[in-house]
Image (cartoon, rainbow, N blue to C red; front, side, top):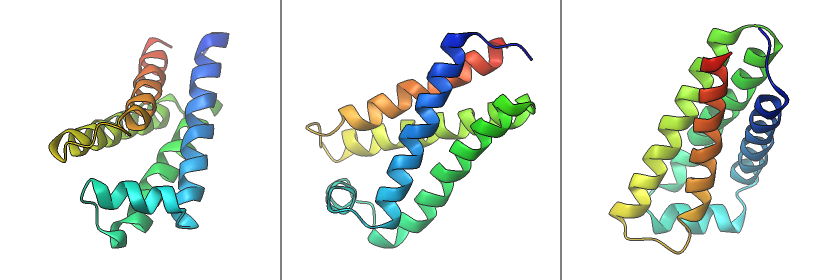
Length: 118
């Protein structure tokens, strides 16, 4: 599987972004708790959501390392995850912080597109 430099950069940024937010989930960073509560996500869901995002980031690494199907599945999962986050923001009418899930969604979708093209 041959990937362009742009693909590696987009996927790499997606991995770093998700790893950073997983750390925020695990340490229960104030911004994570506040945002989750604002859109109606129970505090008890944070560990599960951290695992899902972490699995997505790890799956992207595995995909780039030579198992493209795992990468495609991981990127698909992250894309759906952040689409759900966008929907949660819209349903709760929380627009001041919607840029964050939108950015994560865009990178997940970009990663998926690059993986599918490879």
